[in-house]
Length: 366
Ligand code: SAH
Image 1 (cartoon, rainbow, N blue to C red):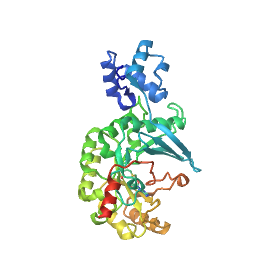
Image 2: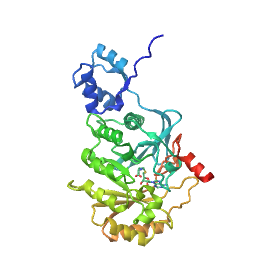
Image 3: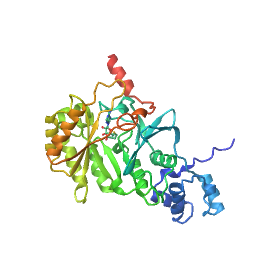
Image 4: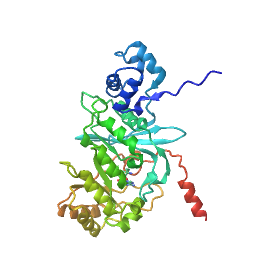
């Protein structure tokens, strides 16, 4: 019997520094990393044989030791409004979703960071799926790679993807190390070269991870607030019981401190009769008054089985008017990709949950 071949390393799992170390470990010069990254991220070439500025011998060694394997696209859907959604197939029947939203002045790609999500926010479709596992670096950056290939993005021509948001499935700060490496690759000139401020991480508020993020990254911060009081936020975002508002706001102030032009984007999903009154808007304004802010009001996107309803246009307009009157920047997010269920909170994929739904079923049976 012959021994199985050693596992090959997926180069999409490596950021620039890792890739340099990998080449050094092969007895090569670190600048090979530059050449290979240009092939992968600028030319979108993943076959070593086609990397013609590497010697034939090195190409052969690479093919033995390594691979460049983005996750596979199972389905590519285009919406009538120009939005796109890709269903990306991972292992053992799990799928995640990636969404592209074109606007006149930018093109935003929304990527996932976990298979499912462990946070259980009461108004989110992903929560219903349960949680399976964190995505690898290759699976996160691979979403950008696949989307940019599918959109025919050109590095030197008109860039189609100008912004990236970690607002798909999952809580990015619970997959800290992989998310930081993948966002570094999004920003690296040898990677996708998106400017720092155009890469945004959205979190439900994992407070200790926010302090760590401040030390290692400069990406823009969006926080899913959704309620101006602990009592209501405990109900909508259960993570609030662990990290209540006062702690979350302190971490956000720290994140933007001493960084010019920085502000926090607050996401606030408007749920009819739950968090959408003028009193809620006034309380919200008071809460974030002293923080450089932008508020993104998100009309709730329903999904099968939800108990919530979208606030009506009049309630949304009133809520926004209160924020504006307090001098805050507040925009109402347009709902896009309705026909392909690509809107915020509708990403479901196919998740083999580990545990939580079973636990719930067991609790219900008791
Ligand atoms: N876990 C991260 C990122 C994923 S959610 C976070 O909580 O920020 C991306 C955004 O969509 C969040 O602001 C989330 O609260 C919002 N969202 C979730 N479900 C929604 C729904 N059904 N309608 C509208 N927005 C929703």
